[in-house]
Length: 202
Image (cartoon, rainbow, N blue to C red; front, side):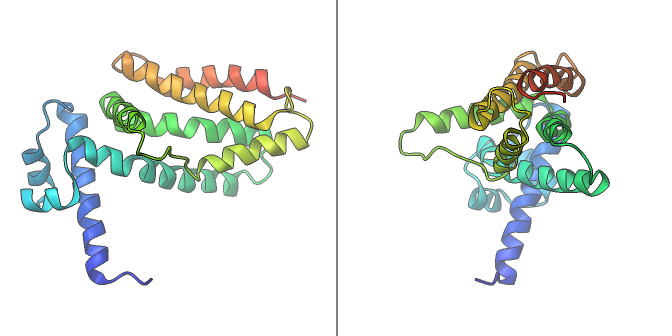
């Protein structure tokens, strides 16, 4: 169904509130950022805010994985365009580190709220477990690695779980430490060790 101008405007307003929240949370911290500050930064009324979101946490819950999917789509497509002959292993390395780069841009407090929001969502049995389409790319890369006889355990699904668990674990450790280390630099080194244990260098 074709979007109306009203639908587009609503999406733009919602995104404007989200971007304002990210900016303020990075500047002042989550606890010190109020909904009033967010509405002022986004130039919307409090009534408009509550049309789109129920709380600050709701802003992050509703937008994080859409932003992540867009971020990965843009950067991974650009990587493939600039490196058309990249090996399967190199593609896995690049793809698996993209979430670390986005986390660094968003800040440790933002990532902490992401984990908190989705753990709370998981505790509610009426909520369906999320499965993001963007992860199909990583799953498919593991299948390709297995088809090329470079996947050491010959189990693409188990290898996918091990690698993506490592990505999330690095994010959680970074957030828990309040961002006290370079998540991109240390995260890449850590993920390379994981990938080397999963995929043959030959």
